[in-house]
Length: 195
Ligand code: HEC
Ligand code: HEC
Image (cartoon, rainbow, N blue to C red; front, side, top):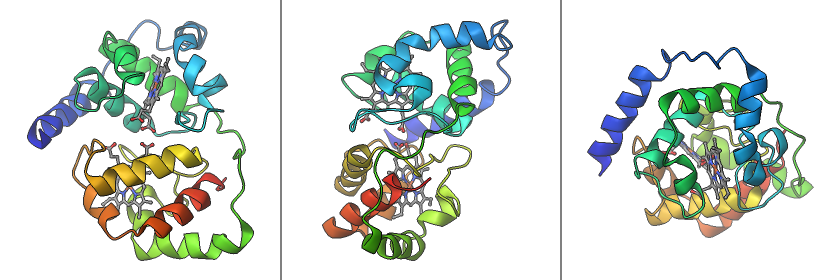
């Protein structure tokens, strides 16, 4: 399973960045195509649904690799899998270009003020910042966490801890093992409130 995911990941890296489509330059057409996505992911990919992740401002490579993973059934979700099943590589490239360029909306929830320092400490002590970036904005195939939906973050962290959340390069499952249930709560709250 992990080897297959790694192979798909390599494939995604190989051909997606070079994919060019006639539509790539036409943001109007891509925006129209993205209407199917914003129904769940919110206008411009800024989710207003606690259990659906925001896509605005995610690194392009993270979006494209996750879409390939959903399409190839490595990552599965009853709502998202059918949406990715018939996407072409050109579609995936277009969605990556479009959503990565959208401006993230201000966080929908603010961190409980006396938890900010504890949240920051956890991201440093557990090296979240070394992969997700100093401001948790993500990079390459690693997602932006700042301003993500709190409930979505909480579910994903619990999933990594339990070994049930898809883990493309095998980094997140071990990273989540050190977290207590309280740590997960503090982190979800802290990250969701970050700009
Ligand atoms: C019916 C609702 C729905 C629609 C429509 C939908 N999605 Fe999703 N999408 C979801 C849910 C729910 C998740 C989170 C799945 C999970 O928990 O693993 C998700 C996850 C994702 C992710 C992974 C994000 C992350 O932070 O891990 C990407 C990328 C994505 N969707 C892109 C798209 C694109 C592009 C479209 C349009 C082609 C689309 N989605 C349409 C519900 C939807
Ligand atoms: C060694 C690198 C690394 C470290 C350390 C790390 N992460 Fe991750 N993280 C990743 C990668 C890579 C992914 C994408 C995994 C995938 O979708 O297959 C990810 C995904 C996630 C996701 C899912 C987000 C989404 O939109 O689907 C969350 C939440 C997350 N990480 C939180 C954390 C937290 C909190 C910490 C610190 C406790 C942390 N990560 C430490 C590399 C890392």
